[in-house]
Amino acid sequence: MMIGDTRSWWIIVGTLVGAFVLTLLPLPVWAAPYHPHWVLLVLLYWAMALPHRVGVGIAWLAGLFLDVIEESLLGQNALGVSLAVYIVTKLHQRLRVFPRWQQAFLILGVTFLHQTIGLCVRMSVGQRPIGSGYWLPVLTTAALWPWIFVVLRDLRRRFLVH
Amino acid sequence: MPIKPLFIQGPSATIRLLLLGVLSLVLMTLDYRTQHLAGLRAGLLTLVYPVQFVVDLPVALARWTSEMVSSHQSLLEENAGLKVQQVLLRAQLQRFVALEAENMRLRALLDSPFRIGERVLIAELLAVDLDPFSRKIVLDKGSLHGVFAGQPLLDADGVIGQILHVAPMTSTAVLITDPSHALPVQVERNGQRAIAVGSATGNSLDLPYILNNADVREGDLLVTSGMGGRFPPGYPAGRITSVTRDPSQPFAQVSAEPSAHPERSHQVLLLWPKNDQSASPSSLPTPTASTKSSASDRTTPAPLVTPLVTHP
Image 1: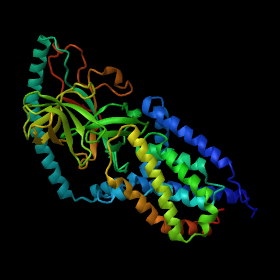
Image 2 (image 1 turned 120 degrees about the vertical axis):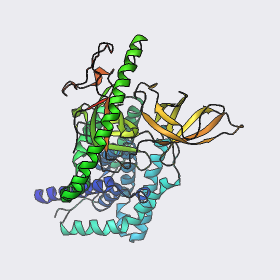
Image 3 (image 1 turned 90 degrees about the vertical axis):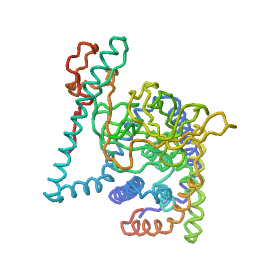
Image 4 (image 1 turned 135 degrees about the vertical axis):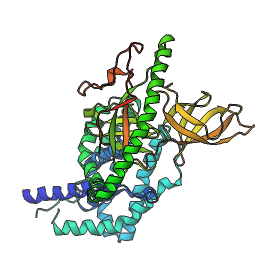
């Protein structure tokens, strides 16, 4: 039990670190606006599959790290990410039996919420308005959900993360 | 396998979310209004340094490999070219040194507090991606190297930006083309002062608040005016690309192209202004340049820049 516990945590933390690496990875200029929210995707998967392990608290911490690496206000991403994870943990029982494209729609919704919170914070501190390209990551994040889901599910089954 | 309870999330998740939400708002307010969170940010930045290092590794490795496998012949050619360039630059520098000495003597006669000559350190950019909607970069030098927040940053062609946050091993800098950055500049031709704000669209600078009848032309060089107290005066900032005068508007629309090329260079210069002695670190060796306060007794003028660390 203890050993399985430690291994589960290693896998979860490892996938999160992988998501941070992907977030920091420089993309070509044309692809930069499409940058998906890797960390949010991984957090949402674990919140749906293992809500007793990855909850609001871990999401908030991960969001704080995102704030540091993205140089946004401390707490901006933390707020959005923890709210998104909260919604998914509340709905995880229903979400699990949805077909994957319907799950993707819910992911679209919570990512949109996260992005909206980010926009509200930016506007309230007086940053200049950003073009419509600001909403592109919402689409790419939702579009990536089915693939992330398959990858992380296989990882979870392979290593018996519970 | 133990049975997992079905409703563990109960009300506690909601309460936790509310608490963390309030905490986020408090953190954001503190971060926006005060400087108290600089330590927390530096600590968290230190924790993410390994991840940044790993992301930068392939790029650094590729650069290293290309250096390793480049042929003897091409290295010799590059070396010869650099030597020629070095001689040319030294010859130019001789003239500047004489001019600087003369300038300093004249300023001393006028009792001007103006000083030139600064200490610099070369930093490399880490190849990591930040928020695509702001223009910021990560450098591989931090507070251990004496970097401080607000420190000016140059590249070979001009001003690039200033340091925003400092961690022990890394620091983040905001570029002058970031929409939230404003740089006090003056037109080199006639001394007309202006403020260069980063443009929201593309890699350019906007100069708002220039009157319609001001003497500003296309192609004018903008240099830092030193008015804000952050940037030393006289460094090139950009070149004016377009001036649109609309009589119905109070100000002309002026945009400029920055002199520095942050997207091309992977090395930048950190600058310690000389009259800012309190900020310079004591752990680093003092440069050979004389830091004496009186410029008139300086018989042999100091070199313009004294590189402390030079990367191959």
